[in-house]
Length: 202
Image (cartoon, rainbow, N blue to C red; front, side, top):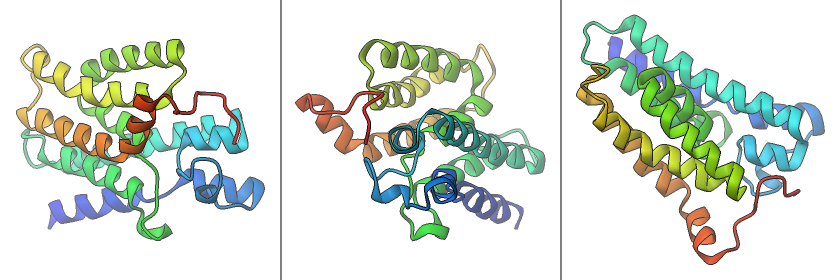
């Protein structure tokens, strides 16, 4: 029962779409019908500007952190199962939110919150490389993909150094595959040279 509670709670928490809420509050619009159509921080930047985008980014990260900590607090052992499933459920909730017709974002910010809480140093190193790539290329999607793909690699390499449960490696691989799937159109545009750069207005 506790595990079911963790999964459901993580999903419902992740389903809160702050980009949708803030866009409705500020401009009375559905963020999913503007810009790229994605309910996330990058599209919020394009449609609403820097301030709302930073708020969305921070809040989406926090909900990933909160879901994991809920799992940690209720975990009966040290296997990592509860926090891992709580975090994954939050990401799935962000991507397919029950409150908004299962049309959400791509889960990058929530993924950052989840992975930074579970595997801080691999996520930090991958995040720094991702930020550098965004700074150089101005492609947020490329940075997002680098973060999610590099984190499982670094988690595996550093698993004994930081004594992470092996389950966290499996989780990061699942999250990477999910991110690649959610970014498949971005990946195609990156290959074709038609991907939008950071700062481009809707």
